[in-house]
Length: 83
Image (cartoon, rainbow, N blue to C red):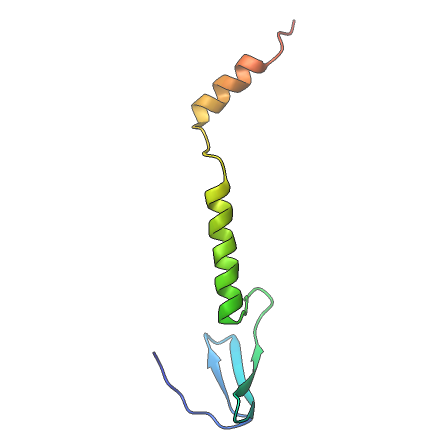
């Protein structure tokens, strides 16, 4: 882990695209501003963890997928007989 000391209005750059700026410092915490491209998701840790838990639950709830050959056989068996 990299530990950096910054004062109010100072910033740091991550990956050349993300800037984190110290907006304010109080006895209760630090206010940070984050400038990032729209394709970069920025979440608080508790929100990120909740999203990850929902994604895991969704994956576990899905029915197992049959193999491609079984899907093709089922599709052929259910196909109406044409001319």
